[in-house]
Length: 419
Length: 206
Image 1 (cartoon, rainbow over the protein chains, first blue to last red):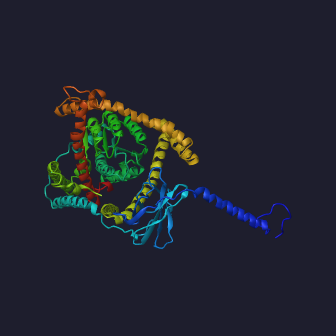
Image 2 (spheres, helix red, strand yellow):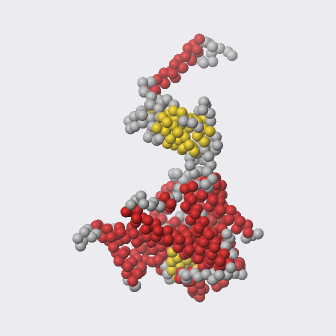
Image 3 (cartoon, rainbow over the protein chains, first blue to last red):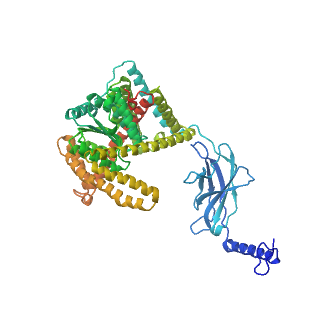
């Protein structure tokens, strides 16, 4: 390699000045360190680091607790805590990039992923022993002494959540009642179902629409298919669409969710097929409007004012749009049947609609309309379940009254708490 | 097979969600199913978009009643999509359009609620029968109890705001809880009917 003559020596040259330059650079870098940490006292270490499996999960998490550093206070030396993890007590330990602020005396190590789903910290694997160390980090990056965990921690998978035994018992009891009455109904036993005025009026509403030559408008709420009220609404749509097909009327189903539109379209198509009138099915009548709440309201109001439906059904989950829809429907003179389990929207429907299905009636509607014994049996079972709950409420109220006199007498509050 | 296959899917998926509630070990499977739901919903969104576009283009083509409104709808649909693809959704024309068009229009629709509340209240509070009279009295007390005059004591220490508080905390809360308990039982019943294949209306069957 040719040597440069004269001028400033380069780092590639083997002149003695190169070594001198390297030393100077090293000294410069080293000189930076004292400006950061020298002269600053290191904070006292946190103590008593304990680790155990995080309860009631499928593993992959370890709960860590510790006693705060003596310098952990406002204006104190501690800025945050740093956790280190290893699968061996002697190490090597990896620093976990968690941000644990001062004042924290616990943390759950369950790994970390960034917003793009890329793993930053791998979660603790189940059944593997992990050792941890914790350090208090002071101002200027000064670190305290390390505190080692008191024995290894192991993440484990739980197969049963004991905090939900009460829910399990209640679900089993209720399910048994429902299944028992379904079985009774399948044996041909006569079961009494109290008449629901709102559902008795469904046929009348569709008949009215047929006579007037106007369409039926069905709105299955504004939520998606992961909402049970939407599912209930769509099952009722199947019954209503079949009646509409038999009466040779038209049904309009504007949807605020594309998945609901797709399913509603299939439900109505199948209903027309079952009624023996597949040719009368109009796919364009089941349409997607928008996901936006008030954009949807504007769209549906427009449909009501243009098409002037003779019967409106609002069955599903509704929020602030309930009254706007129901009042517009009322203004065009439609017979209106609403149903929702949203307590805050029920008064609006009661005020603006001819019939309202309240809470459980929405979920019972499809079974009621089917008149099928097995489905009706499930309604009787549900009523028996309600009776049991009613008894619990009465017993609970009596115990609560006695507890006012003596709080230690009987405490059943914990029976009803779920985790 | 056409009917049994969907019923089997419903049963398996539903049971996994129920079991997961009681057994944390099933959480990863439940999360996987939830992700599948999101994927299906995204594909359905494309169908929804296609449905909306097709119906409005058809309306313009046939010059059906109100076809003129389909033009701004399609311009808005394509325009907003293009703005978001080109300039992103954090800033730029998309945000401007959202803040200056979408939000005011939504607020306009929402503000209609005030007028509809008045007309619905008028109908609901007409004292036609005993229940309506009770509703009317309760509504007047609650409304007055929310404004400053309701806090002024009369007849000694009785204040309308206190009566309002009592109505909201006891009769109103009891009614809401009754509805919630009934709805919860209804959810269990309908879930069982769907899981066991007794309720098949969503498949177009009785």
